[in-house]
Image (cartoon, rainbow, N blue to C red; front, side, top):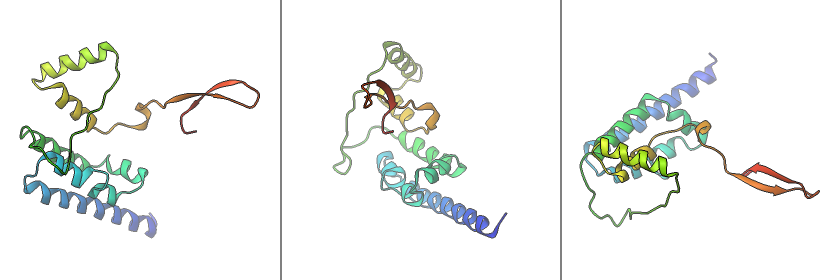
Length: 154
């Protein structure tokens, strides 16, 4: 391995260790899970600042350090309902899904003795690879008037 690659790998390892150290320090203060998420994993959190490119973030999400942070977050979520927080207002989204998927989620929530909301948030907090996310397709018309289907943003 070249000296440059060794230096890059050492820097990345140091960044991962520093991110986990910060997460552990915050975790020991027993914050609510939303504050922990915001400070560590949120858009302006420690992880995004340490790994700003999509490639760096995806690589970090495959590490033991990331798994440790996810474990801390899961433990904090066990503490019960959150008090209202002016710093983090709740948002509502509507998700269209087939009835069979909705029924499956409802049954899973029942089996796990939790709410659908908590189950869905747990699922949303998990990392999934790009290959599991279908691209949006859009109809396009070329200069000859031919209709085609393209991926959104291409």
